[in-house]
Amino acid sequence: MTGICIHSVLEEELRLGTYHRNIFDRYIETFNNIKVIAWDPSSESESESILLDIGDLEKKYGYGESLCLVYCKYNHNVIASSNVKHIINFCVQNDIVYITTEDMLYKALQKGLMTFDECEEFIRTLIKQDSYLSIRSMDEYVPREIML
Image 1 (cartoon, rainbow, N blue to C red):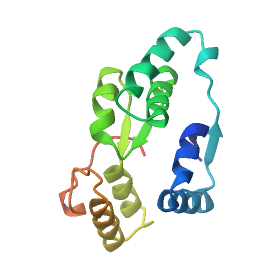
Image 2: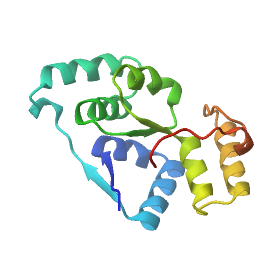
Image 3: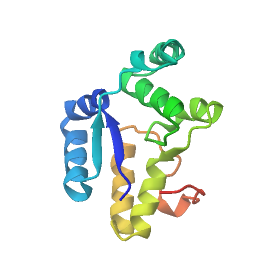
């Protein structure tokens, strides 16, 4: 089973709000494949570059998001994010594979983990919360060639 790493800072951010905390807890209960890590960038051999990258990103984004992007850059990992417009330039510039909310919904639909109607409801909920999505319906999704 493929595991998912989440930085302890990001886990704390997710647990601040009830909505995200409930989704996160339900995911953990269902898949049980999340490993919480406490990455210390200052202990890395490239710590100066890492800390500069975090500082630059943190001027635009939250600490958790910045930390995850930089972690993926220096550890050659994949990032999953619903903030594609925030991460896409950094990911493209640094050859980081990214997975979008839309990609995950498509995979959940393919694997029978969610129905089409559940995906549509999820999309409507995100749109009501002013989340940015590249689609308004699963009918608009164009599959990307990524490994999920």
